[in-house]
Image (cartoon, rainbow, N blue to C red; front, side):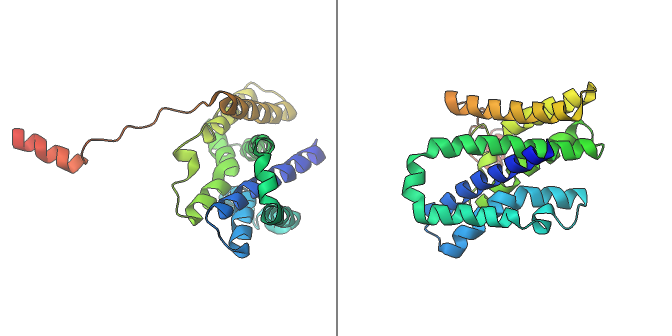
Length: 218
């Protein structure tokens, strides 16, 4: 089980690194910029998780294979971006699998440390989405996970299912499997049916202007 989880973790890291590298393509960054975005997208969430849990140095710094996987993803995009783009549906599927695996790894870490319901959800969500948040901040974008797409929501649902199954006394393997499976399923359904959460509607004026207008009328 552990070996399979490591392989899935590396697979997810590669998928995340590729998506991060394409953000560099969008902004026409140089090779170093591409590698930075690929690496931070691939391992950023895991580093944040380990720092919060006091697991130092972070796993990505103790096992350099994660860096090599991110670099491989960046190199692949640098040389094969047009070919990869034509098969973007495959990349999105791989990204969904990686999302589920990262959510599971982060969530099970919270379970093992005795975190409560919200702690498990938070740790799993940070692990799965932290790299993408860092990527978007580096290119001065509002992080995708809070402005569009059914992405972090899929992780939250998966981790909530994990916490519920764990509270019911299910074995560790089942707890992990539920989180990974539910997260992947939610993400794939969202992509298939273009699901998203309702967005906040903008106000016609700023709150200050609206308050002044009300006071004037009063």
